[in-house]
Length: 61
Image (cartoon, rainbow, N blue to C red):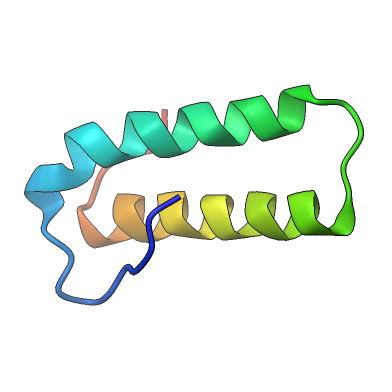
């Protein structure tokens, strides 16, 4: 998970950041049981992914 995403995010990093975020999200979802903390991390990861896709005008895959 990225520590800080701001409006000045460098889209040149998206090719590195998105696969990492998607992998972390898949691992959390793959656990089966989700604690409240896990759900919060999942929500944050989904938000980070959406932010990068929108900011960098990348179509979702």
